[in-house]
Amino acid sequence: ASAAAAAAAVAALQGGGRLQHSSDSTKQQVAEYMQSFRQYDWLWKDDMNAKYAIFMKTNPGLEQFEKELKYYMAIESDISHIAPVHNIGALSLETAPLKYSLKSAATNWKTRYAHNLHEQAKQQLADLEDYIKQTSKSLSRPINDLEDVRAVMMTLKEVRDKEAEIDQEFGPVEEMYGLLHKYEVRVEKEETEGVEGLRYSWTKMRTQATSSGENLQKVQAGFKRDLTRSVKSFITDVS
Image (tube, rainbow, N blue to C red):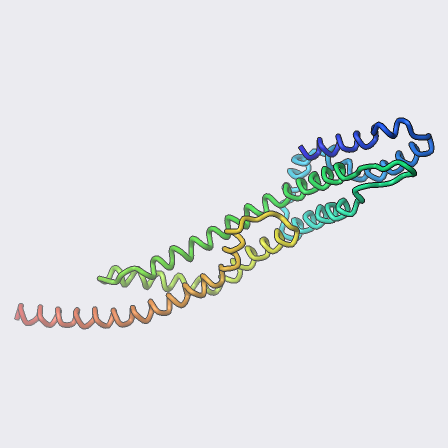
């Protein structure tokens, strides 16, 4: 839609009513001014989806995504510096509609390239949040028998193993969202808060794991005493 609007805005600027009654010299200057917008005509002439598909076939990494986002951000910046009105002699060209349409088209290109990166970041964030939530739930499990003891012990082991690699999982998610923020890609508030609170949630869960481990030692000692008494009682009964 924005591409069509940009093309229409260019046509409107070229065919303004007052221009038809202007001198040849003025028309020439307008034509030269309009030529400066040719550098942006690919925004509505090129096939965005086809170009993006070619890019994705290269299996791009974070660095390649940043390069593309940086490029389209620069285009947006250049367009934003276009004056809303351009005077040529007594003629005033209203360029605001064209400027808005061009910027909207450039933003669409940037958003297209950011989409895959955003989806990847969103999924990884959801996976980490779910892991922390489920692990915290497992650590809160009441210990009533040896099966509960084994389950909590297994969870504690998983947490210890996970701690060695947690930075490798948090880092990429934080970097991806950092890129999206840097290049002004729209991100839901819940996601931003989720990323910001990720390490705090992990630290809180680790504290819970430590407390759960200490409680487990006490409970295990109690189970051991009960088991010893039961065995002694059993031996007494059968002898």
